Image (cartoon, rainbow, N blue to C red; front, side):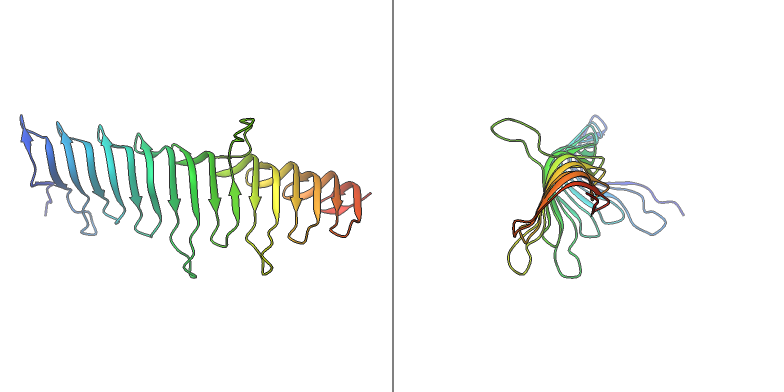
Length: 230
């Protein structure tokens, strides 16, 4: 049995799809089809339109030369959603907000910021479902870059603020990151007020640094994998 692609309710000009129309693909092995409803120019998706993949993913927004280009909303079948983001050459590019599907507690992770070729890269804010927060921004005064994502991981300088505890307090780290872990120079302030400033490696205090406890006690010197060695 053969399945053919169908053009439904479309406008035609010079033998090609032009104007508004609905296109439904041939069904796949599971009996599902892809569907596009929107604008066409010379048989190419260009303008405003809605595309639904066979797996249920859905894009609504702008198109150019058959690809997602411009502002749009991408909703995945699993509940993840790219809200009102910018697309270029069929990938997330520019600024946009991505919200992950809610977890078992109904909470979602959220990222708002820059994308390049579908990957979080540049300035933005990432908020975990538990309220932890990673901030990336430029200082309005100095234009110094304070944080960035690279290859979808925390890299460079950035500020991470944890979710608040039962007392409404948060821990905070401001400093260097490599591949998502604290590595380099940084300042960490615990929710109880303890403060460490110095070197880090692989997410642990490592190298020269100064730990000042909330009660005023100070440990300053060399550290190895989180342990003070003098």
